[in-house]
Image 1: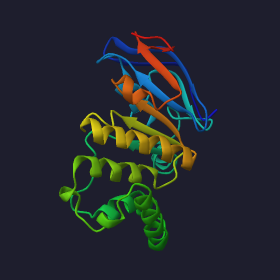
Image 2: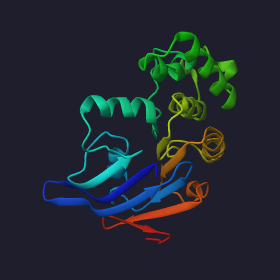
Image 3: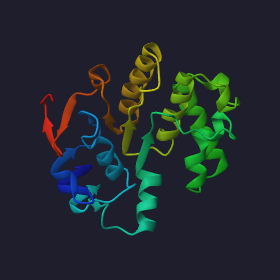
Length: 222
């Protein structure tokens, strides 16, 4: 199993946001995670992405407990095994489109030639080769999110986490980004966990999970 949570819990003060949560995501799965605001979706995504640690239970990626490994090992897992796409893109404005896509590879110590070739491959896939040397503030919202998708996939992650990736886009651009996510995760063999409020966005995922009262309810609706 690629990702597995067992009895996972996370609290803030005395309030348990997640409690006794169990979840399995296999390699290549596409999973939509839905639920009302404040139900813990972003908290769960942060735990999956190694940005926070649970207070009880376990969360393993490829058999490694993300809550138990050292900070150094966790940073390496995040660089090599995880990719994240955010609602507000988080591109670096001082870098070109190509340099933004190359960045995770350069940070991991990959050779410049390898990073450039991988960036070109992904920019071709997202239809942005003509914009490769543009500065990111020159891009439209849809273009910026396509760059973000390419950047997240650059290290060939086993798991791609997408946090409301269409929340800052109009309908047409949102649909384009979702279609791209479905196509590229299948092509790259990456599992996808998509956090969304939108049933339309969730439609690209064969599995739909709802987070209610800090627990996963597969197939249920809130």
